[in-house]
Image 1 (cartoon, rainbow, N blue to C red):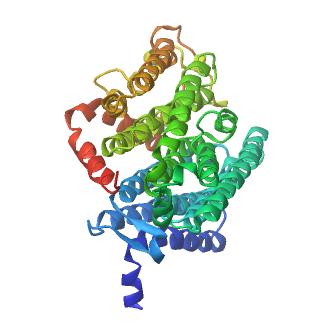
Image 2: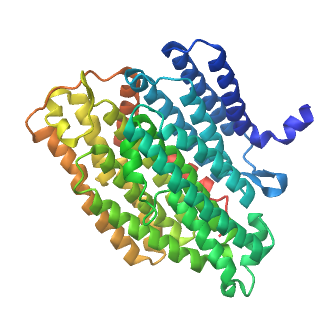
Image 3: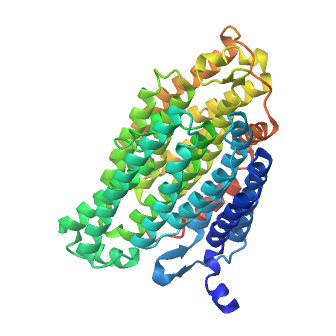
Length: 483
């Protein structure tokens, strides 16, 4: 038994999360159905995620693989898994008080988050089309349920239905692409597909190229890249805010990691084909995300379009197909996760006696009513806008520099212009908080939400003092691939 456990040591973090979800399911079923027990399960779920993170950090530096390369343990996977675990833990923490207010604090929510996280970790380590699809579906099935977690809310039910229909469509397209790739290469392993893709006639293999296109379309749905973004604003607005915070962070990390691994590991020989697709997705996402957010009055919809634009920025360095490009993707996603979780934590803190509010105008005069919250939200908005010397500026710096060095000048200029346009709606929120006539005060910020807001604001403010740990970790993770 010990020999078997040692042989699957690289999968221990995934097993801990999956077994933890099953144990907590049994705990919830046989314990009283009340808020106290649900909160206990939430804290235990956070503990499970923490243990999984510790196991990842304690693994040997040398990478390894299992099941004939279907599961890959490397520096890149560990980096992205830590991000996904941290985002999932923050999402559970943000949900406790908010769900209690809305009378939907149930033990099933943290269990579903754990199952979704297990799927994300499998996606990040996937080295085979089959393991890719298994991880993707385990994540997606859990996300469909949590989107509609407030069953008595029409908007939440609508969000879950829209996400399910379009998510099922994207999964079908991805599976069709995988079947085409298998049909024209005779393999499902990324390493074996790469051997075919490096062949002399690979560029002329129309079936392989079509399979690549459908694969990328399916993944583009998951990262809500334009033109496959149509579900994002409605789902973000309709789902409970803690769920929206989760959607904007952890699944994005996993899907971006999957995209990077697929194009760099399975299709290095036809890089010219996928670079064009990724460049188009980046440009379309940056421009639509920047311009569509201008007229939004609901802050959750605004942040939905903001996430679409940020996906575009994260794809810019990937186009270069270099180590510096992948490093830029990793740095951008790490900073983006912190910024977006902090921003949604501020949205959760927007509550009055009559309930939660989501309109941007409700933030009017927040600087007078709650100075610390206004300062934290302002720092996060400035960072999302890319104002130096905040963390968001350095995220864009590390995203654009590889593209500039590789000669993608037009792509970089479009990204900078989109960032300038996007600064308008971020700075508008700051203007409403500091210069508009004060609105009715919000209720005091709770400790759990305040903790996430504080950590996020401190990170974006002080990142410039010590960027080396993140930059070095991203550089080490990016070295996992051959370019």
